[in-house]
Length: 310
Image 1 (cartoon, one colour):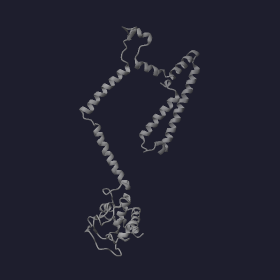
Image 2 (cartoon, helix red, strand yellow):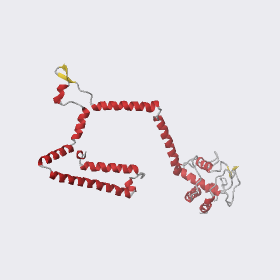
Image 3 (cartoon, helix red, strand yellow):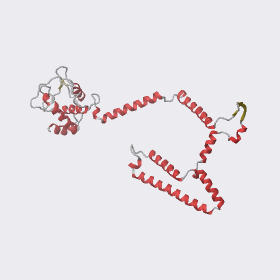
Image 4 (cartoon, one colour):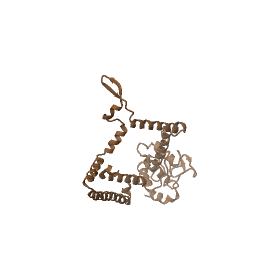
């Protein structure tokens, strides 16, 4: 087989087979393994050098053997090698698959029919056609048993599986993509960066009605536990997004603020809970008890206080 394929084809084929197996076995994420792990690159370079060395040594030994042959044997060996490099083996395989008779042997299969001087040959079906037909029969039997007898997973089952995986991937992405937050997925933000951003948004858009310390003016007091439309993070987010009471409440900010910005300012609003404003407005709305109010964890109290005092 070595003489059937030249070395300049054989070496790349073997190398890329080893390269493909290496990439398959080693999990390197989105990048090739040889770029992530330098040891893999060294291994592949070593493999390439070994393959080249083997070809060089083999060629050298072949030349030594060639010098020991007599003239007739040398000519025969070189002729055979040249024919092999011309891929005559492919031609032979093709002839076997076609299965036709050579022209000089057509007399054995010619029929008695004569149509205006045209004679018909009694050729058998080509082997490639027969092999394909037999394979299709085997495939059909396996398919019938797999999907109609043993009720294997069909295209609808595969679709449902892919939809479930897609929904799970979307939910996982939403958890890390803050700009996709909505009233159903919003959570209390406690990072200093988010609270600082929320404070900036509040001071830009909200102090005219709620005062800088959240004590309230035109708008309600944000420091007590009375809330008109709910005092948890989801309710506050919904109020900021959709606006307050019809006709007399706060405008809807969803056109001016991004989802992340609404989550940030809603989380900042909750930092006013328990503080003492300079001129607190009287409580409005229903009492939102401690059991239902979502407040920042104790571990972030210093951070919240620092942001509030900025």
